[in-house]
Image (cartoon, rainbow, N blue to C red; front, side, top):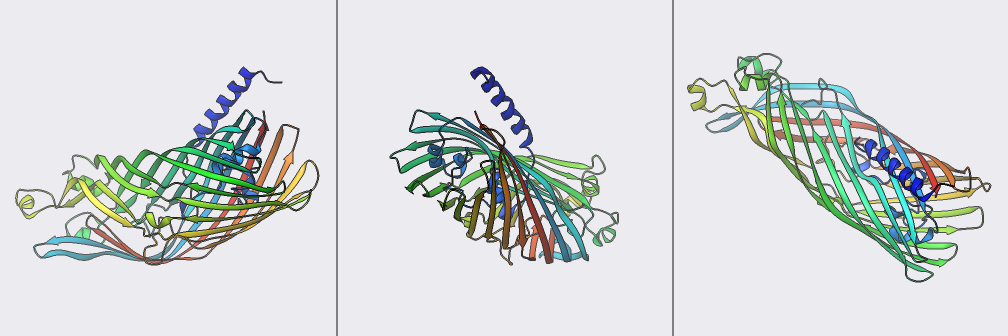
Length: 469
């Protein structure tokens, strides 16, 4: 038996390990993640706000914490293996300033296929501590939102996007309180740190030689920003009978004002600085956006000693995510007539460029159903199915998040190795509809129009350790 000091020291070590792995970003549906444990991967998180099987209920519905009668630690990791294949046409235009306005000159017109995506790991940590008979406190570390797409810097999509990342890390203390033997409530705070990356290539293409510049003017624009914000979540749980319970949970929206750096590196930067440097840097880059609120309604029912059924309906208010404004971006802009007359190169450096990336997401529903089968005292199997709506639209869908409606199937297992130690493994396969991309984007004096389709694939693999301390 571990001493109390040894338990605290072990817990501190585990938290440090989880924190060290949280820095990675992820790619997911509409970039909202419900994979906040490993066990739920086995049934598509069906019943998440009502099952309250372990300490991860602190995030899904903190009212479910009262179902735990001992200290418990949950440590999980979910791997998302996501693939994106784009096929289509990309037209890149250079917008030259004239006395009567901007004139678009065709820089390139390319048709091709390219791939993005990759494997990302989502860690999660939950610790629950009963305080008396009616109160349970908890601490969780989760990643509720994440996005990652990566296209090569020489791909057909380079003028629209290369690397895109959003990682939202949520450190959340919570508490559950038993009001009666059937009814409980819970709430928690969400201390969220978000980091975002939006990179792409800027180039003149065929216009370069006309302007007396090198044929290859492709220049990398790297933009990184981060911020902290505070949100909250709350829930209720009602137990109709010892076998049937219903949970309702709400996670608030969170608004971020991000700041960071913008770097413009390559031939155009060298031209703009007169050869003094191949880099233009802004230390005042900013952006802002709001992550949506989500409401979850779940039911859990034990049919008998071996079988249980469960389901969840999630509603996400994605309508708050309608635009990503990029401000104080480093770039090279066309020199004015006065600057050219004084001997300036055709482009000059700037660190005050503003750009907008329309999103115009719409609200979505997610439905998950599942079943558990307890084969023996040691083994339990899970099965789940689900439907997850795509928040993007054909008018504004872009290659940074080329999502589509999805249908999901999941399978998993739990093994109770000892009285205090259990292991879970799960797999979810996502059948994702092809995404149509038909949108344009203006950044400074570059306008890029993308027309094509994306073929998206994804598998999620979950592992979890549950320790009854």
